[in-house]
Length: 492
View: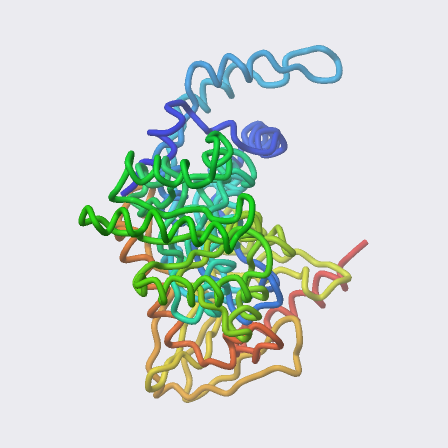
């Protein structure tokens, strides 16, 4: 497992949270209910990018965060310095001692990284003392929201790449240092084959790629001199950026240096196009390279690429050997937040009996789902065909059942119980003890590929994807409606 947070930051990240999590924790403690057992679920309400699916991502880092959760002496000193509106200390000394001695004792179930997932499905379920669950809300959302978003964006881009490698080049435009590292990891899970981010290569083992920028060419008296200097300095990694002054003239100079390399038993690995009409320029460059005897020299394209531009370039017959995608991948351009939420769905009363909880709203999509939730995925032949969200407290197995989309009751799907299925939420922590071994990043990436293969092509198309049946088990749906009515009827 990657000890990402502990190795990179080398300090406690327990204060990486919204302040109200701490004020609520204090109020739970003062009320004497901090140990009350509760259940929270992480889920999102709609797929990003108008996509037909999302990719679960970030679990390994969430595990690392929970595993290393503790309040250090420095954290306690800081919290001790905080005051309320009256200028008095905000937190009692006894509470700070409680935090200093706090150890996570929760149960955590989660959908494994690389799986395709859908709206309203809990991708993580945490149960345990309500104070502990509350303190983990913000960091878990921070990790899972961003990772899932970027892995999904990468999967979309790779899906239209025409089996041509996609490289992640986004560090310089990423949202901060951790945004850059997280994006590199998430993009690799989603299908990218390498990154320009060297630290991500070190930490996560992702292949790193890159040679030179325009400044290298501009630092010399001529473009040709810059190319010869690079070839002499690093003859086993020669990829020339050819568009600093004139792209096709740059290709001619790359070919000249390519002959020089060939005479010395070396190879012109590739050229990169970073501006202009990439379809036209790649076609012309391919003709020039082939005619000169360099059919194996690859052509890398970059310059604000995304899934739509790549799809268009393929339709135009562009001769691209690898796509370098930066800004629009690592910033999840055009849909910059997944919007996953963390909702209380059950709590124990004084008699340790479970009580279902629900958050109401005038917007149907924002009404939460009560219960201790699990996700069951049904499959037939080589495809997944439906996901059922059910409540472990109330589910009763029968010969068949309906699943109903909580955001659109006109979408329902009948399932017979002779279908094969898998329970998606797997045990990760039991009473605070880690019981799950995270697979390697390569294995997670393979799971993503395998999971996407089992999704019908109509659900993976970019424009107007088919709706995948994912919804509430019928009895849970009806129970939810009854709970809504009861609460509304009893409002003051």
